[in-house]
Length: 152
Image 1 (cartoon, rainbow, N blue to C red):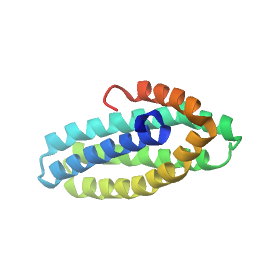
Image 2: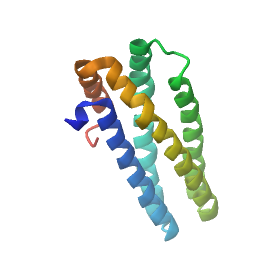
Image 3: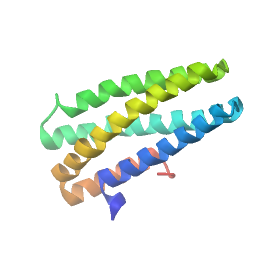
């Protein structure tokens, strides 16, 4: 079952979050700042949960299983800092009803997430599934699902 793997579950969550970002972008394009702000709060909440689940559960499990403590997880943690910065920048621009600044920050975030998610989905998640084996991956997936909330 796809969502019994780290790769399946977190890839699906990336898709869900990308869809929310697209909805917020559409509202922003229509200059519907209240709608865009409400959607953006969902993005911030969802990405916050996702990042927290990765940093508190996935990365330590990967590091224990592979012995790699200075590899992909270091890069991912650093990129998470940039993601959080851009989330705040979009929120501030939306609060100021500055459509231009919001669009620019959303575009930068979308570009970063494209590269970031590609690395996670192509390298980190599959290597975690492989290193943990089916039973270990399923157990971690259950923990991740609980952390991500019921809508993942």
